[in-house]
Image (cartoon, rainbow, N blue to C red; front, side, top):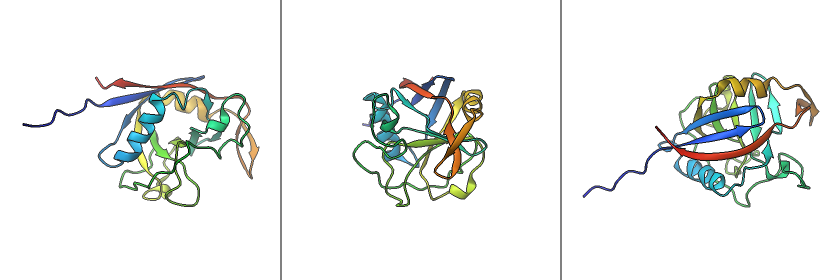
Length: 172
């Protein structure tokens, strides 16, 4: 008797600039996909913001310190745990969803980024775990928001780019 397979889910990332739909790659990053889904189901990402934007490179979000009333520095928060890296052969191409981390390979928690352009220098060093399958125009709108200098790079958006919600929906 075979075990029924779990239906595939997509994530709909609703932002102040529109919606992006992401398909996951559980075959190459199962624990990372489950972590992202768990946080999405719990509403962890709701009310956060894309706090780091570099046109042609990536947009980064998922930090709880970007929520209204949070006191921590944006880009330094997490869920209270770290994930073991699941480096894989998926290329960091436009639209790829990957985990942000500090210098330590096993330091990702909740922060993620979406590649705006090819970033092949990140291949096998960051955990790629999905890709935007709808809404690349939204990715472009976010990537084109003007930014000011922050930490030595021009990556702090001049306007708040809200992540209103991330909802899981069945794949068609």
